Image (cartoon, rainbow, N blue to C red; front, side, top):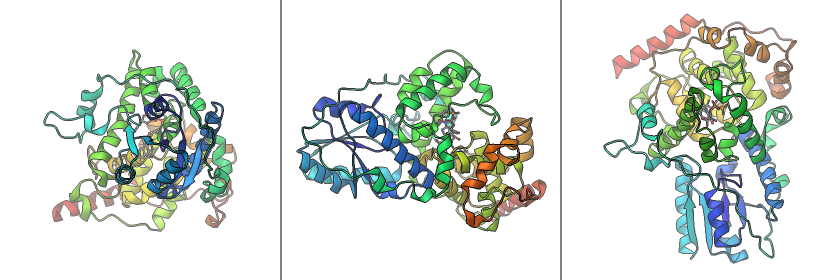
Length: 457
Ligand code: FAD
């Protein structure tokens, strides 16, 4: 049996290859508590991915079996039904997954099943990269120096997938209604998704042809199509990270910078594995008494993309309409919430978790704690992004801002008002709001809070 989780693909899949080698493969996806807890957009996007994978398996004479419940029970029952001896899966490294998988492994082994877990979700598993003294890395630059030349295993081809004579029963995606929480937003975001393994490979090919050469400069420009847009595929494992790494092993600063970003993703998993509290507590213990503001009307205006700060609102609207936000803008909106609005980074993290189709527990936590200043290798608290200067530098002609803020001229900006809930009572005819806080004033308030906190610490 093969328990699929964040590895919804057929190529470059060590667990699938091992299961196929061992005999008949029963691929199963389980709607467990972790799936139930996913944010609205990511859960909806998962449903699309499962539908695509079902088709890809069917085209090879196989099937994707869907079941709900606690994984240990589901796997045990299924193994008994089909007479399976072993269960394969690809390892995950966040606290909740490690805890769940350890329990599942113990239960299945006690029941006499053989459990084999495999690599494949990252380039280098978190415990394989060590500092000179045998610890884990807290800073990216030395981490990168360590891994940049380390060989990454070659991606594996799709194996022959043997089917059982009789398939066990499964549930249906319609019954699961994974998109329920998206409500009318689904129709809008659906215009922007790129679903499944084939689409992911096509996107990679396009990036290798048109994007990678200028990636080092264009990656910071939200007004250009300068990044790979592979994140929605990585988070569900629709494309293998080893495939992408090997494809990017080519000369040039663009390719080198791109490989470095792939290593940032690994670094996030490295951190979340070694310090799982990064997901829900200030990574630096000493930040626990910092006077963050809790959720508030100000944070609600930020969520609704009505702060009056154009680059911030543009980014938040981009996320609501597409399920994606450019990395440069993620940093700006996160800095604005945590510094200018002095709001706890967990408020922003939760909103991203709900809205992003590429939500990834490790990169999201690392990104927010980096922006807030509470994480490892974080931007220092006193380094406060000025959204206006950032916008002038990275969106110099205002193209990105117009695209997301001008409903009369831009269909993408108009789509925002079709996606948001009626209950927000917002219309494209409303005037664009004034700034909720002056940039100097917000910056000073953050610096003062930091000074007070340092004095008290
Ligand atoms: P590209 O620029 O083409 O980069 C290629 C790949 O490298 C990405 O797909 C991603 O896997 C990895 N990568 C690039 N930048 C980073 C980074 N800063 N940190 C970690 N990995 C990186 N990324 C997510 O995948 N999911 C999240 O939930 C997420 N939340 C974030 C929250 C904040 C506050 C910040 C500042 C960043 C967050 N990121 C997150 C990282 C980054 O913004 C996205 O990975 C990137 O924008 C995805 O676009 P792309 O695939 O075109 O990236």
